[in-house]
Image 1 (tube, protein in one colour):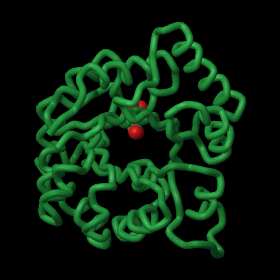
Image 2 (cartoon, rainbow, N blue to C red; image 1 turned 135 degrees about the horizontal axis):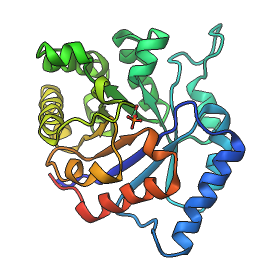
Image 3 (spheres, protein in one colour; image 1 turned 60 degrees about the horizontal axis):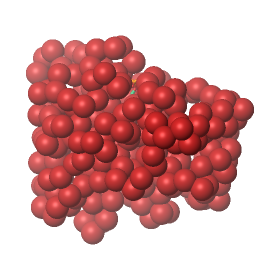
Image 4 (cartoon, rainbow, N blue to C red; image 1 turned 90 degrees about the vertical axis):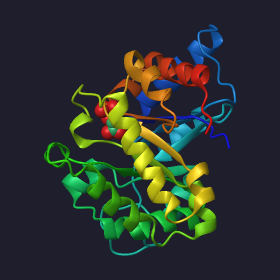
Length: 262
Ligand code: PGA
């Protein structure tokens, strides 16, 4: 079974609506100049802040670039100051949502229990979830990567209907590699991603072969090819290096060259 590679830009708290427009114009400029093409071989996703979603969706409407949010509440509505509901993301036209990013877990107290509600909710609302998992530096040095991943993956997926498991995207993001310039070795990234695939196999064999698992953590044009060529790594979740259209598209081009098959 072949899995379409996916390059996802997580903008975090970067880019106003004006800057979002500039990014898409920059990207269009690269396509017009022939430096890049937006062909079908790679799923290209950008994840702007909530306030820039509509601008990004309008600006990319004639392209195959998908636009995802960075978070979502699991309830349909209610007294949750500062939160955004699935229906709001549907209305604006978002295609999916990042869930459980380590910054959400670390700074905003998001728990595995929250994720066990959010992931099935996103699917039920027609939004592709990107579930983020990964170990801290201390867990890494204590050799606890696998036990941490087991806990996070099993909790987040336990309430997902088996027939929909393959639609979940999982991003393995070692926390010590996020924003630090310290990319995981290709061996560590491959081992962790293969372990995650084995955890999905515990739920369903076919889903494990179909589910896409990304690597995230200081990915950039210079290191992306060696990550993308690992057999279980199906793409990248990129923070810093996704903010510039040129470096973002270099990673899309690298994913095109590599292709991904299981
Ligand atoms: P980074 O962030 O590429 O800047 O390390 C990745 C992420 O947090 O998704």
